[in-house]
Each structure stands twice: as structure tokens, then as C-alpha cells.
Length: 227
Image (cartoon, rainbow, N blue to C red; front, top):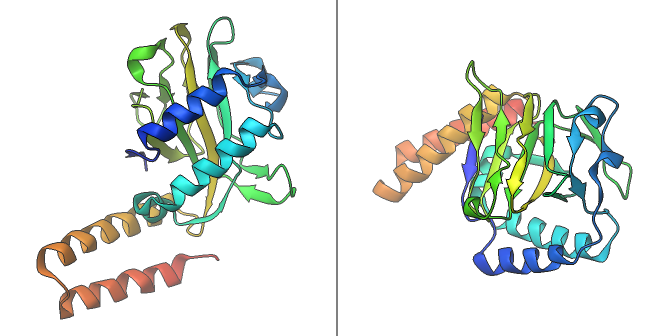
């Protein structure tokens, strides 16, 4: 399931993040790439242990905690520590690749299965040319340049790329989620059901029908979840 989640970060949070990243100690992004991805990766990445990365990770995780849509769609079991990248100048693209299936928390070494990939855009589309996130999800690839503060989540098993940035710079946060529900189809069914229930309860209040359907939702989650 491909899903846009608007306004994960507030405008003030975006400005704060971009201000910090403007003077951040960027590294060659290839240092974190696997043997296949390193051949097509050409961007910059923030060192995990630097002060800017620590502050922004905390801000992003706090923002995700506010997002009921993010929780409903992902049903997160583990969230890999958010990272930050920059595309500009000669370090301006990332060719077709597939994200690794199992990743490791940098501080603990804990294994995290990458079910969902997430990109949180930090630069508005008008501020740079190129830099589209292209996801090969259907016979025709889908292309995304979201407003700053908006998040795109998509299945981590999709081939994707970031096209060359030819003007300006593209700043983003990226991370992976291990879901309590491994199947993308099951997660999508639960998400649509949860959103429909919210609309039903908002329109009609609590009723015997909404209680029964809520029970069905939780019974499905109980059946499919791995906690």
C-alpha cells in the first residue's frame, strides 16, 4: 500500500530541521549502502551519531507518535532509527534499488524486518528540480514530490529510485518500519476498515453496529498480529 500522510511535521519543525541540516556534517551516502546499492547511490547522509541527527531523530519520533494515520496504516512493531539525506550538486541521485529486508538498529544491533519504507520530505517541491521518488509499484512507475513535512510510506520490497536533482537541494528523512502485521494486504484491509469505522462513529456516534464492527477489526488484528 502506498500512502501519503500530510503534515507529519509542523511548519516550525520543518524550518528547525532545515536550519540544523544547513550546517550539518554530511558524509558520502555510499558508506551505508550494500554491495548492489553502492553502485547506484550518489547522495549525502548525516552520520548517525552526530548531535544534529540525534536531535532530529527525537523530533521525528515525537511527530510520528502524534500521527494516528501513521499508526493505523503501519501498525508498527519497531521503527528503525530515522536517518537524513541530501541530494544536491554532484551528489544528486540514487538509481534503481531494493531496500534490504533485514536491517539493524545502529545503537543496539537489534534486527528489524523492513516491511515499510518511509520518506519524510523536508524540502518543498518548488525549491528543487528533479529529485522525484519513483516507485515501481504498478506497470507504470509512480513519481512523488511531496510538500515539506509530508510523509510517503510504501512496501519496502518495491524497486525505487530518486531522480537527479538538477537545481537546489532535496532534504529528507527516511526510515523503515517492521509492522505487527507482516502482510501488506492484511495491513491495507485493517487500515481501510479502521478509517471507515472512524467516519461511521463520527457521523452516527456509538451504536451496536459500530461496536460490533470494532470488535471484528480487533479480532482480525488479534488473528494477524505478531507483537
